[in-house]
Image (cartoon, rainbow, N blue to C red; front, side, top):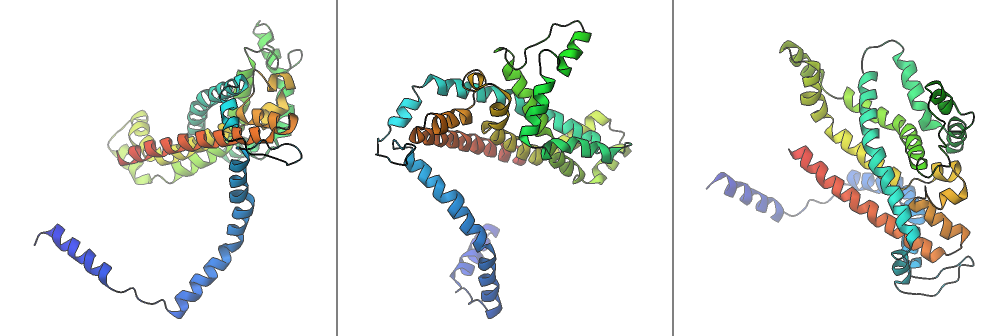
Length: 313
């Protein structure tokens, strides 16, 4: 009998054996395990799963501000894909994703590598770089409004020293998306740096010691040791960044006038807010969030498939 046949026979024999009854201790452990996770399960069910299913249901209705509704089948989705505002919001959101995600990955990796070195003031630098992660969005918006101010903002003051004309960062339709991208990148770096730094510190030091003995250059060590070992962490950070930017809302809502929020810088979440709270078309707004969820799910599944291939290779 071959080795494969023997293994198959052993598996079948193991499956055919009756499962041993749980001991009293095992039953007690299982019971208390369920008791411990029950509050979390209840919270997820009440505040996530039930509202999620309600939202899907309401997307097929004409729910209004008085919570009265009638079913209207797929009309919300048909109207959504005929809505110019939806395509504007989708384009803006895609712009932020395409511009910000690669820059966030690159900058956070380079800064994490720098903070992983033995340099003076490393603890202070880590603290300063982590500050954006614990800063309230309203405070972030206020600071960047001052920095981007056309007349006396620090950024335009610096451009003036270089004899460059001041830029209307908060009102020029050709520039406002870049302004939003800068803020997204700045506010997203902190947490990503911490995650990548943890990934760098988990790489076995023996690999670098062996590379030193073999006389491998720093650049080759990065591409043949650091980068391959960081693929799972980089993949996790990229998935986080995609999901965060697809759902970006507060920066745009707090930074710009309503006319711009509903036009040149509008995201899908801003479009949802417009219909849910300004126009009181809650059924239509629910359809927007269902589409956003579907897009996020598809992108995440694609990223997971790519990540599995990278780990296998």
